[in-house]
Length: 413
Image (cartoon, rainbow, N blue to C red):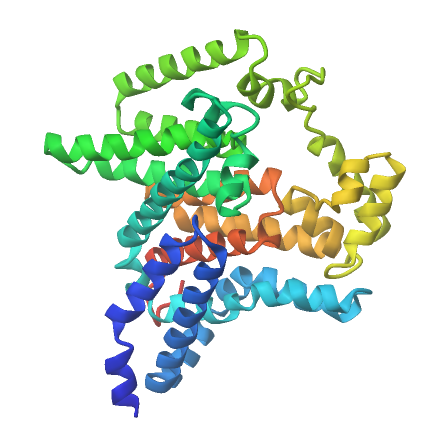
Protein backbone atom coordinates (compact mmCIF):
# COMPACT_ATOMS: atom_id res chain seq x y z
CA UNK A 1 0.00 0.00 0.00
CA UNK A 2 2.83 2.40 0.85
CA UNK A 3 4.51 1.60 -2.47
CA UNK A 4 1.27 2.34 -4.38
CA UNK A 5 0.81 5.59 -2.45
CA UNK A 6 4.37 6.69 -3.22
CA UNK A 7 3.92 5.97 -6.92
CA UNK A 8 0.53 7.66 -7.12
CA UNK A 9 1.55 10.72 -5.11
CA UNK A 10 5.18 11.08 -6.10
CA UNK A 11 7.10 14.33 -5.85
CA UNK A 12 6.09 15.37 -9.36
CA UNK A 13 2.37 15.09 -8.58
CA UNK A 14 2.83 16.87 -5.28
CA UNK A 15 4.76 19.67 -6.96
CA UNK A 16 1.99 20.17 -9.53
CA UNK A 17 -0.57 20.37 -6.73
CA UNK A 18 1.53 23.00 -5.00
CA UNK A 19 2.09 24.99 -8.21
CA UNK A 20 -1.61 24.81 -9.01
CA UNK A 21 -2.51 26.20 -5.62
CA UNK A 22 -0.01 29.04 -6.06
CA UNK A 23 -1.20 29.90 -9.58
CA UNK A 24 -4.80 30.04 -8.35
CA UNK A 25 -3.95 32.28 -5.37
CA UNK A 26 -4.56 35.54 -7.29
CA UNK A 27 -7.55 34.03 -9.08
CA UNK A 28 -9.85 32.07 -6.80
CA UNK A 29 -9.55 31.47 -3.07
CA UNK A 30 -11.70 28.31 -3.11
CA UNK A 31 -9.53 26.62 -5.75
CA UNK A 32 -6.40 27.74 -3.93
CA UNK A 33 -7.60 26.32 -0.61
CA UNK A 34 -8.81 23.09 -2.23
CA UNK A 35 -5.53 22.36 -4.03
CA UNK A 36 -3.42 23.43 -1.10
CA UNK A 37 -5.44 21.28 1.34
CA UNK A 38 -5.01 18.23 -0.88
CA UNK A 39 -1.30 19.00 -1.18
CA UNK A 40 -0.44 19.42 2.48
CA UNK A 41 -2.51 16.42 3.60
CA UNK A 42 -0.91 14.21 0.92
CA UNK A 43 2.58 15.56 1.62
CA UNK A 44 2.39 15.09 5.37
CA UNK A 45 0.78 11.66 5.04
CA UNK A 46 3.62 10.59 2.75
CA UNK A 47 6.16 11.63 5.38
CA UNK A 48 4.26 9.78 8.12
CA UNK A 49 4.08 6.61 6.04
CA UNK A 50 7.72 6.65 4.95
CA UNK A 51 9.75 8.36 7.64
CA UNK A 52 7.86 8.99 10.91
CA UNK A 53 11.03 8.65 13.00
CA UNK A 54 12.79 11.15 10.78
CA UNK A 55 9.94 13.61 11.28
CA UNK A 56 10.24 13.27 15.06
CA UNK A 57 13.98 13.85 14.77
CA UNK A 58 13.31 17.00 12.73
CA UNK A 59 10.87 18.27 15.34
CA UNK A 60 13.43 17.65 18.07
CA UNK A 61 16.27 19.38 16.22
CA UNK A 62 14.30 22.40 14.96
CA UNK A 63 11.65 22.81 17.63
CA UNK A 64 12.54 26.45 18.40
CA UNK A 65 12.09 27.90 14.87
CA UNK A 66 9.13 25.60 14.23
CA UNK A 67 7.30 26.83 17.32
CA UNK A 68 8.16 30.44 16.47
CA UNK A 69 6.82 30.11 12.93
CA UNK A 70 3.73 28.40 14.31
CA UNK A 71 3.16 31.19 16.85
CA UNK A 72 0.11 32.58 14.97
CA UNK A 73 -1.57 29.20 15.47
CA UNK A 74 -0.31 28.79 19.03
CA UNK A 75 -1.44 32.21 20.31
CA UNK A 76 -4.81 31.70 18.61
CA UNK A 77 -5.13 28.34 20.39
CA UNK A 78 -4.31 29.94 23.74
CA UNK A 79 -6.75 32.75 22.99
CA UNK A 80 -9.54 30.24 22.43
CA UNK A 81 -9.22 29.06 26.04
CA UNK A 82 -10.49 32.31 27.55
CA UNK A 83 -12.32 33.98 24.65
CA UNK A 84 -15.93 35.09 25.06
CA UNK A 85 -16.57 34.24 21.40
CA UNK A 86 -15.61 30.57 21.13
CA UNK A 87 -17.42 30.03 17.83
CA UNK A 88 -15.60 32.93 16.18
CA UNK A 89 -12.35 31.86 17.81
CA UNK A 90 -12.58 28.34 16.40
CA UNK A 91 -13.29 29.80 12.97
CA UNK A 92 -10.14 31.94 13.17
CA UNK A 93 -8.21 28.96 14.47
CA UNK A 94 -9.29 26.77 11.57
CA UNK A 95 -7.75 29.21 9.11
CA UNK A 96 -4.35 28.67 10.74
CA UNK A 97 -4.41 24.86 11.09
CA UNK A 98 -2.33 24.28 7.90
CA UNK A 99 0.65 25.81 9.73
CA UNK A 100 0.82 22.75 11.98
CA UNK A 101 1.31 20.49 8.98
CA UNK A 102 3.31 22.50 6.48
CA UNK A 103 5.93 24.07 8.76
CA UNK A 104 7.30 20.75 10.14
CA UNK A 105 7.18 19.33 6.60
CA UNK A 106 9.28 22.22 5.26
CA UNK A 107 11.96 21.58 7.89
CA UNK A 108 11.85 17.83 7.26
CA UNK A 109 12.15 18.01 3.47
CA UNK A 110 13.54 21.46 2.63
CA UNK A 111 15.05 20.26 -0.64
CA UNK A 112 11.55 19.72 -2.09
CA UNK A 113 10.58 23.34 -1.49
CA UNK A 114 14.02 24.73 -2.33
CA UNK A 115 13.88 23.04 -5.73
CA UNK A 116 10.39 24.47 -6.27
CA UNK A 117 11.25 28.10 -5.51
CA UNK A 118 11.53 29.40 -9.08
CA UNK A 119 8.55 27.37 -10.21
CA UNK A 120 6.48 28.85 -7.37
CA UNK A 121 7.50 32.33 -8.48
CA UNK A 122 6.51 31.63 -12.08
CA UNK A 123 3.23 30.05 -10.98
CA UNK A 124 2.30 33.16 -8.97
CA UNK A 125 3.34 35.44 -11.85
CA UNK A 126 1.25 33.41 -14.30
CA UNK A 127 -1.74 33.50 -11.95
CA UNK A 128 -1.36 37.28 -11.57
CA UNK A 129 -1.25 37.69 -15.37
CA UNK A 130 -4.40 35.58 -15.74
CA UNK A 131 -6.07 37.65 -13.01
CA UNK A 132 -5.20 40.88 -14.83
CA UNK A 133 -6.54 39.65 -18.15
CA UNK A 134 -9.66 38.26 -16.51
CA UNK A 135 -10.40 41.46 -14.57
CA UNK A 136 -9.92 43.58 -17.66
CA UNK A 137 -11.90 41.18 -19.82
CA UNK A 138 -14.85 41.31 -17.43
CA UNK A 139 -14.60 45.11 -17.20
CA UNK A 140 -14.35 46.02 -20.88
CA UNK A 141 -17.94 44.94 -21.60
CA UNK A 142 -19.52 47.23 -18.97
CA UNK A 143 -17.19 50.08 -19.97
CA UNK A 144 -18.19 49.92 -23.62
CA UNK A 145 -21.86 49.31 -22.77
CA UNK A 146 -21.87 52.56 -20.80
CA UNK A 147 -20.54 54.40 -23.84
CA UNK A 148 -17.11 55.02 -22.29
CA UNK A 149 -13.61 54.55 -23.63
CA UNK A 150 -10.91 52.16 -22.37
CA UNK A 151 -9.27 55.05 -20.50
CA UNK A 152 -12.25 54.95 -18.14
CA UNK A 153 -10.86 51.69 -16.74
CA UNK A 154 -8.83 54.01 -14.49
CA UNK A 155 -11.89 55.93 -13.34
CA UNK A 156 -13.61 55.53 -9.98
CA UNK A 157 -16.38 53.45 -11.51
CA UNK A 158 -14.13 50.69 -12.85
CA UNK A 159 -10.79 50.83 -10.99
CA UNK A 160 -9.69 49.84 -7.48
CA UNK A 161 -12.22 47.62 -5.67
CA UNK A 162 -14.45 47.52 -8.73
CA UNK A 163 -11.66 45.97 -10.79
CA UNK A 164 -10.57 43.31 -8.28
CA UNK A 165 -14.22 42.66 -7.46
CA UNK A 166 -14.63 41.11 -10.90
CA UNK A 167 -12.94 37.99 -9.54
CA UNK A 168 -13.97 38.59 -5.90
CA UNK A 169 -10.50 39.20 -4.45
CA UNK A 170 -9.74 41.98 -1.96
CA UNK A 171 -7.69 44.68 -3.71
CA UNK A 172 -4.69 44.90 -1.29
CA UNK A 173 -4.03 41.18 -1.57
CA UNK A 174 -4.37 41.03 -5.36
CA UNK A 175 -2.07 44.05 -5.55
CA UNK A 176 0.44 42.38 -3.25
CA UNK A 177 0.51 39.18 -5.33
CA UNK A 178 0.97 41.28 -8.47
CA UNK A 179 3.82 43.30 -6.95
CA UNK A 180 5.61 40.14 -5.83
CA UNK A 181 5.20 38.70 -9.34
CA UNK A 182 6.69 41.82 -10.95
CA UNK A 183 9.71 41.77 -8.64
CA UNK A 184 10.27 38.07 -9.31
CA UNK A 185 10.13 38.60 -13.08
CA UNK A 186 12.49 41.58 -12.76
CA UNK A 187 15.04 39.44 -10.99
CA UNK A 188 14.61 36.58 -13.47
CA UNK A 189 14.99 38.92 -16.45
CA UNK A 190 18.60 39.66 -15.48
CA UNK A 191 19.42 35.98 -15.95
CA UNK A 192 18.34 36.07 -19.61
CA UNK A 193 20.72 36.85 -22.48
CA UNK A 194 18.48 36.70 -25.57
CA UNK A 195 16.56 39.77 -26.77
CA UNK A 196 13.41 37.77 -27.55
CA UNK A 197 13.08 36.39 -24.03
CA UNK A 198 13.84 39.78 -22.48
CA UNK A 199 11.11 41.30 -24.61
CA UNK A 200 8.64 38.69 -23.39
CA UNK A 201 9.60 39.32 -19.77
CA UNK A 202 9.41 43.07 -20.31
CA UNK A 203 5.94 42.79 -21.82
CA UNK A 204 4.82 40.49 -18.99
CA UNK A 205 6.06 42.96 -16.38
CA UNK A 206 4.52 45.92 -18.22
CA UNK A 207 1.07 44.31 -18.25
CA UNK A 208 1.28 43.49 -14.55
CA UNK A 209 2.58 46.99 -13.74
CA UNK A 210 -0.33 48.66 -15.55
CA UNK A 211 -2.71 46.30 -13.76
CA UNK A 212 -1.13 47.14 -10.39
CA UNK A 213 -1.67 50.87 -10.96
CA UNK A 214 -5.19 50.13 -12.20
CA UNK A 215 -5.84 48.39 -8.88
CA UNK A 216 -4.55 51.48 -7.06
CA UNK A 217 -3.15 49.22 -4.34
CA UNK A 218 -1.00 51.84 -2.66
CA UNK A 219 0.89 49.60 -0.24
CA UNK A 220 1.75 47.12 -3.00
CA UNK A 221 2.91 49.94 -5.28
CA UNK A 222 5.10 51.39 -2.51
CA UNK A 223 6.52 47.93 -1.77
CA UNK A 224 7.42 47.42 -5.41
CA UNK A 225 8.96 50.88 -5.80
CA UNK A 226 11.17 50.54 -2.70
CA UNK A 227 12.11 46.92 -3.35
CA UNK A 228 12.92 47.50 -7.03
CA UNK A 229 14.99 50.60 -6.25
CA UNK A 230 17.28 48.78 -3.80
CA UNK A 231 17.47 45.70 -6.04
CA UNK A 232 18.50 47.78 -9.08
CA UNK A 233 20.93 49.70 -6.89
CA UNK A 234 22.45 46.40 -5.75
CA UNK A 235 22.69 45.29 -9.38
CA UNK A 236 24.20 48.67 -10.37
CA UNK A 237 21.49 49.27 -12.97
CA UNK A 238 21.66 53.04 -12.58
CA UNK A 239 20.12 53.79 -15.97
CA UNK A 240 17.04 51.74 -15.10
CA UNK A 241 16.76 53.59 -11.78
CA UNK A 242 16.83 56.96 -13.55
CA UNK A 243 14.31 55.73 -16.12
CA UNK A 244 12.00 54.44 -13.38
CA UNK A 245 12.20 57.70 -11.44
CA UNK A 246 11.36 59.69 -14.57
CA UNK A 247 8.37 57.48 -15.38
CA UNK A 248 7.01 57.61 -11.83
CA UNK A 249 7.58 61.35 -11.57
CA UNK A 250 5.86 61.99 -14.87
CA UNK A 251 2.91 59.73 -14.09
CA UNK A 252 2.55 61.15 -10.58
CA UNK A 253 2.69 64.73 -11.80
CA UNK A 254 0.14 64.01 -14.52
CA UNK A 255 -2.20 62.34 -12.03
CA UNK A 256 -1.91 65.05 -9.41
CA UNK A 257 -2.33 68.18 -11.49
CA UNK A 258 -5.41 67.05 -13.41
CA UNK A 259 -8.74 68.17 -12.01
CA UNK A 260 -11.44 65.62 -11.23
CA UNK A 261 -8.96 62.79 -11.33
CA UNK A 262 -9.68 59.64 -9.30
CA UNK A 263 -6.03 58.58 -9.50
CA UNK A 264 -4.97 61.80 -7.79
CA UNK A 265 -7.60 61.51 -5.08
CA UNK A 266 -6.83 57.87 -4.38
CA UNK A 267 -3.03 58.08 -4.47
CA UNK A 268 -2.50 61.48 -2.88
CA UNK A 269 -5.47 63.23 -1.28
CA UNK A 270 -6.77 60.23 0.65
CA UNK A 271 -3.47 59.58 2.43
CA UNK A 272 -4.25 62.06 5.23
CA UNK A 273 -1.48 64.32 3.93
CA UNK A 274 -4.16 66.47 2.35
CA UNK A 275 -7.22 66.52 4.56
CA UNK A 276 -9.92 67.52 2.10
CA UNK A 277 -12.66 65.14 1.02
CA UNK A 278 -13.64 65.24 -2.66
CA UNK A 279 -16.54 63.92 -4.67
CA UNK A 280 -14.24 61.17 -5.91
CA UNK A 281 -12.92 59.80 -2.65
CA UNK A 282 -13.16 60.21 1.09
CA UNK A 283 -10.09 60.72 3.26
CA UNK A 284 -8.62 57.39 4.36
CA UNK A 285 -9.21 57.11 8.13
CA UNK A 286 -7.43 53.81 8.72
CA UNK A 287 -4.62 55.49 10.69
CA UNK A 288 -7.04 57.23 13.05
CA UNK A 289 -8.93 53.94 13.38
CA UNK A 290 -5.83 52.39 14.92
CA UNK A 291 -6.83 54.23 18.09
CA UNK A 292 -9.75 51.82 18.51
CA UNK A 293 -7.38 48.82 18.59
CA UNK A 294 -5.04 50.63 20.99
CA UNK A 295 -7.98 51.26 23.33
CA UNK A 296 -8.77 47.52 23.36
CA UNK A 297 -5.13 46.77 24.17
CA UNK A 298 -5.24 49.19 27.09
CA UNK A 299 -8.22 47.30 28.51
CA UNK A 300 -6.50 43.89 28.19
CA UNK A 301 -2.75 44.58 28.08
CA UNK A 302 -1.33 41.16 29.00
CA UNK A 303 -3.30 38.45 27.18
CA UNK A 304 -5.97 40.46 25.38
CA UNK A 305 -9.67 39.50 25.27
CA UNK A 306 -8.94 36.28 23.35
CA UNK A 307 -9.35 34.97 19.82
CA UNK A 308 -12.16 36.77 17.94
CA UNK A 309 -13.34 38.48 21.14
CA UNK A 310 -11.64 41.78 20.28
CA UNK A 311 -14.26 42.63 17.63
CA UNK A 312 -16.96 43.61 20.12
CA UNK A 313 -14.62 45.89 22.09
CA UNK A 314 -13.18 47.49 18.96
CA UNK A 315 -16.67 48.02 17.59
CA UNK A 316 -17.61 49.80 20.81
CA UNK A 317 -14.60 52.08 20.29
CA UNK A 318 -15.74 52.81 16.73
CA UNK A 319 -19.14 53.75 18.14
CA UNK A 320 -17.58 56.13 20.66
CA UNK A 321 -15.47 57.69 17.90
CA UNK A 322 -18.58 58.15 15.69
CA UNK A 323 -16.91 56.09 12.93
CA UNK A 324 -20.05 54.75 11.28
CA UNK A 325 -18.19 53.16 8.35
CA UNK A 326 -15.91 51.07 10.58
CA UNK A 327 -18.78 50.30 12.97
CA UNK A 328 -21.23 49.11 10.28
CA UNK A 329 -18.62 47.09 8.36
CA UNK A 330 -16.99 45.72 11.56
CA UNK A 331 -13.47 46.65 10.41
CA UNK A 332 -10.49 44.81 11.83
CA UNK A 333 -7.36 46.69 12.96
CA UNK A 334 -5.92 47.02 9.43
CA UNK A 335 -2.53 46.43 11.04
CA UNK A 336 -1.30 42.97 12.01
CA UNK A 337 0.76 44.14 14.98
CA UNK A 338 -2.18 46.09 16.42
CA UNK A 339 -4.43 43.14 15.60
CA UNK A 340 -2.30 40.93 17.81
CA UNK A 341 -1.98 43.56 20.52
CA UNK A 342 -5.75 44.09 20.66
CA UNK A 343 -6.50 40.34 20.55
CA UNK A 344 -3.68 38.71 22.55
CA UNK A 345 -2.11 41.67 24.36
CA UNK A 346 1.65 41.74 24.90
CA UNK A 347 1.79 37.99 24.30
CA UNK A 348 0.65 38.43 20.72
CA UNK A 349 2.64 41.59 20.05
CA UNK A 350 5.94 40.11 21.26
CA UNK A 351 5.41 36.86 19.32
CA UNK A 352 4.70 38.80 16.11
CA UNK A 353 7.80 40.99 16.44
CA UNK A 354 10.02 37.95 17.12
CA UNK A 355 8.48 36.21 14.11
CA UNK A 356 9.33 39.12 11.80
CA UNK A 357 12.89 39.33 13.13
CA UNK A 358 13.37 35.62 12.52
CA UNK A 359 12.04 35.84 8.94
CA UNK A 360 14.26 38.81 8.12
CA UNK A 361 17.35 37.03 9.39
CA UNK A 362 16.44 33.81 7.59
CA UNK A 363 15.85 35.63 4.28
CA UNK A 364 19.32 37.20 4.12
CA UNK A 365 21.37 36.36 1.07
CA UNK A 366 18.79 36.47 -1.71
CA UNK A 367 16.91 39.56 -3.03
CA UNK A 368 13.69 37.68 -3.76
CA UNK A 369 13.50 36.11 -0.29
CA UNK A 370 14.22 39.48 1.33
CA UNK A 371 11.57 41.11 -0.82
CA UNK A 372 8.99 38.49 0.15
CA UNK A 373 9.51 39.22 3.85
CA UNK A 374 9.60 42.97 3.21
CA UNK A 375 6.29 42.76 1.31
CA UNK A 376 4.76 40.77 4.17
CA UNK A 377 5.91 43.33 6.73
CA UNK A 378 4.73 46.34 4.75
CA UNK A 379 1.39 44.70 4.01
CA UNK A 380 1.04 44.01 7.72
CA UNK A 381 1.25 47.75 8.39
CA UNK A 382 -2.02 48.46 6.57
CA UNK A 383 -3.78 45.09 6.66
CA UNK A 384 -4.48 42.46 9.33
CA UNK A 385 -2.85 40.06 6.93
CA UNK A 386 -3.06 36.87 8.99
CA UNK A 387 -6.80 37.39 9.52
CA UNK A 388 -7.54 36.41 5.93
CA UNK A 389 -6.87 33.19 4.04
CA UNK A 390 -5.00 35.08 1.31
CA UNK A 391 -2.55 36.36 3.91
CA UNK A 392 -2.11 32.93 5.49
CA UNK A 393 -1.34 31.45 2.05
CA UNK A 394 1.27 34.16 1.48
CA UNK A 395 2.77 33.46 4.90
CA UNK A 396 3.08 29.77 4.04
CA UNK A 397 4.68 30.66 0.70
CA UNK A 398 7.28 32.76 2.52
CA UNK A 399 8.03 29.92 4.93
CA UNK A 400 8.39 27.42 2.09
CA UNK A 401 10.81 29.63 0.15
CA UNK A 402 12.73 31.29 2.98
CA UNK A 403 13.11 28.41 5.44
CA UNK A 404 13.84 25.74 2.84
CA UNK A 405 16.95 27.70 1.85
CA UNK A 406 17.94 28.47 5.42
CA UNK A 407 17.69 25.03 7.01
CA UNK A 408 18.83 21.58 5.96
CA UNK A 409 16.99 18.47 7.14
CA UNK A 410 18.18 16.90 10.38
CA UNK A 411 20.77 19.63 11.06
CA UNK A 412 20.71 22.07 13.89
CA UNK A 413 19.79 25.65 12.82
